Length: 171
Image (tube, rainbow, N blue to C red; front, side, top):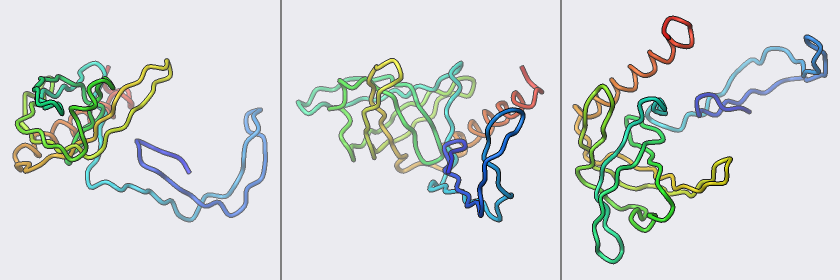
């Protein structure tokens, strides 16, 4: 089992033996008959480039009734929703199943799209350096086709740029 672009991939090898390749110990097998890609999502998920991050502006209502405006960076985006990164101390503003209306996704070099978001999952994460953050998974709600097309065009453009960079066609 392995992961490629956040998609789980499984292969079954009929027989594995040890060997040496270019002076390194390796496992040796025949090419598998099948490869299983476990993509449980309806949409391709993209991590925005670190050089041009996407931010989401939204208003959150705390349990005590106060409203606060947040501008949070996206961890990833797809045609079905986004994942936000937030400090753990604001978790109370993002309970599961809460709805945020008229949120603004500010996509560099493309513009702004307004979306409604429903919180589906909130998980505390820790980084290698020990810092803790909150990852908030949200789905788009009442998402117009024009907004979905806007996001899909952005995702396609970034993927084209990444592939061109990987192949050496772009700096």
